[in-house]
Amino acid sequence: MPESKALSMLGLARRAGKLSMGHDMALQSVAKKKAKMIVFTSDSSKRLVKEFEVFTKKHNPDIPVYIIKPTIDEIHFSLGYRAGVMTVDDDNFCKRIISLLTQEEMIYGN
Image (cartoon, rainbow, N blue to C red; front, side, top):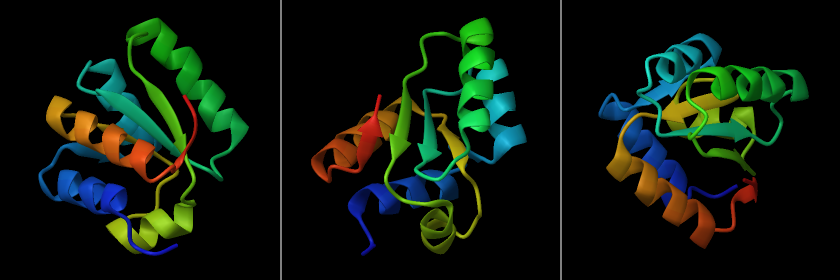
């Protein structure tokens, strides 16, 4: 997959410290109500998605959840960290990333 603006924006959010990547960091972000959106890669396990669904309903049910087309390996290549789940912890980054994901048709479901 060629480098996309959405993945570049995720990388910028990571460098700004506004991206929580990986299972434990993402759960912690949801629990502390810092997460503005949850992003799963296309090859994340159904168990992982279900775990976050249950946890999110309990702690912060208003967070939007997106499953994007890039795989864990593509995220690793673009962001330098291997993760199947991440949270965006800033409103402005969240809005821009959602806009770019929609424009680039990288979202499977919402």
